[in-house]
Image (cartoon, rainbow, N blue to C red):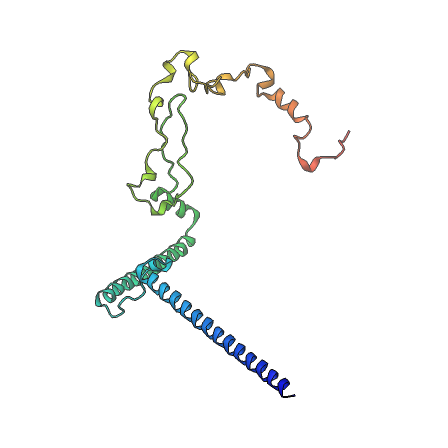
Length: 232
């Protein structure tokens, strides 16, 4: 019996030593994990200082709020903003007053004012050369109220350039085509040159006989009279 009790005591002592060794092992692992985390934190801080991190290039947000120069610059910007808003409000009020004044005028008075201001004046367009290329000035940024006299958008965009400056009517008939001598040479000069309409033909003459004939065609009468029976 004593031998059995001694064996149990020895086993219990062995288990206690194993538990103590396991506890020490866990403590060592915990200390290593803490040390590794501290090392990573220190490396991250060093990366921020050295500029190797992506946040290092962010703009500084530590400006001195009490800088007198910055305050004076802010006051100038604020005064400019107040003046700009006041000018816009004044322009809006003037436009509104002008609109009310124009509404009280007659059609003849408004037409006379428009003629004096040149609102309905048609600008003279220059004459194009024979077979001159067409260039559109573009549909973007066409707010003419913001353009001054020297604005590039007021330049003559449809003027002759390069080969268009020469008189192509003096060339032989065979050379009066676009891209002559190149692979993209056109076959015809223009549509009017290929027009074969015979205006001397009676079908193309506008006279009373032709008008009477056209009036009897289907689809040329008044739509309200369609489907009505003719009176005999």
